[in-house]
Length: 300
Image 1 (spheres, rainbow, N blue to C red):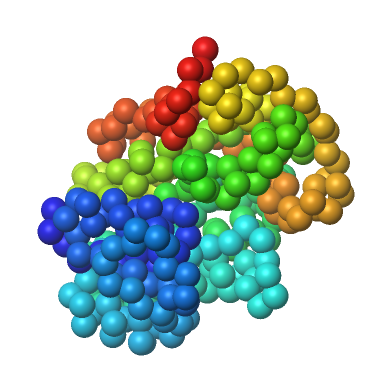
Image 2: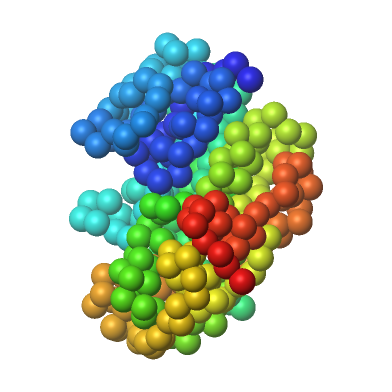
């Protein structure tokens, strides 16, 4: 499909993978990042460094390139200095949505977070923190911007170098898994290849206009079980992990933010059946996508 697609946040894990995927599908890709000092290897398309909070300049750039679709992959689950949740998640979304509308984009595809649907519900206390509130504010800004949009609320998106996997690998290599709380909270990991296909289809498929979808895999799996599957995949054989329980304060000492701990333990899951129906895709379960990522694997 010939179109012009802007990938904002193109140096991040999902952004760089989607940029390549869209290019392979025939899109002309504009990669927008705060800095072009760290362009990922194997990158495609045009690259530009830009202040995403400068709405007018961003809109002019998108308009000058005849933009069709804008994908927003900007966001953080840990505050660094001036990059607060409100700035990096909510304010960036507001600026990008306004720029997409001014440039006449046909669709904005916006990345949010699994759990946002339960903001304000006391039955879901771990999604009431500043991180999730900033994501809810971002979604509100997108809805009110006037641009046609599709919002995705992802669980963990998995490849070989996603942040979740990179954090787990040192433990796996040591044949141990540090478990925050008791490790029973469920994940619903989705393969990066499946995620890219769904994201790419969003502007074209019926039922996606001004809608929000859980971007989740087909299996709800505990952290402990997933860590063991990853270990089996990495080693190419079963290596029993030793589990070490970690309290919240210990997890913070290891570098996790309060919000990242809540994300890890919130037990949020979504509707993968609806996702598969709308986007005409069969999602791969963890055993399937780990075989792809680690092809020597002979998992039971």
